[in-house]
Image (cartoon, rainbow, N blue to C red):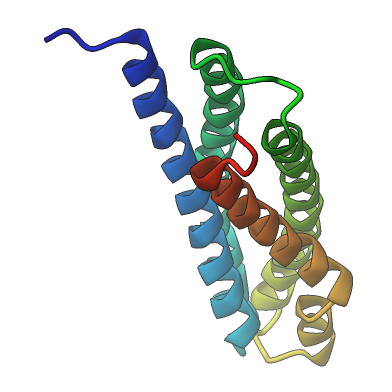
Length: 159
């Protein structure tokens, strides 16, 4: 029995969702480890490793959007459905917040590298930068938007 176009699209769309969610989870776990670290070298290490998640997040984001829209067409769903529009809004929000949060965390990583090179002693300024509420709202907000997006994809309310 041959695999249909719809089945291929769904399999690749789900692959993209796993890449996106896996990258976001990796970044979040490493962010928490950096938050709990005491030495600047540890903070720089964890935030540097979190940057490795970015390609997975980008590829996953692109696959979920492109193939998701193609799936809406292929499965004869209505593009004006609540769950389709809400998914696109959440996709944009997650990407924007994650990108801004990541930029802010990268500045903290660079500051941690400077501190690590000049003695690697714990720093209250580094701790304050790690605990910046704006960065937390952006990063955690992105993860929450991704999880809400995933929920919409699974349940498709109103479909």
